[in-house]
Image (cartoon, rainbow, N blue to C red):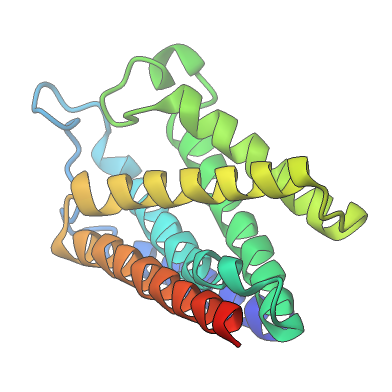
Length: 204
């Protein structure tokens, strides 16, 4: 947990530092996707950059958790690292969620629900709550009941979908799209390795 926490702290620090360093640069558009009138003021550029850089940090941290999920049952070490990175990536994601909802949109859900900047605000909110619930279950209950396993795989699948779509398909910058595709590649490689290990175990 210490290593994952240190990684999260470092990435958050870098995210806020990058937002400050680039506060005068037009890295991300003040206009919503698809064009139209600007919905962000120039004075909001630093906060806008913070939302992007914090979601990048969350994406980087969630990659180990998504990749380690298939190995939780076979390795205590994998299970510990999965829980650590699943937890700290949630913490960083919640920083992003707060910055987007409260700082950028002023907790105005009428704007959030109708802005093209957020492609699926209701789904994103359900996902955030579901992720919190799963982390609480993992820490406080530690059950491996069928319904726990099913919902856990479900929230991980949704995490993969939302992070990939947000970065690889909707990302404004090449760096964002690259992170999205690296996430997908990591999960695919992990799935192949997990399937190979499963087949070897059956043949043994």
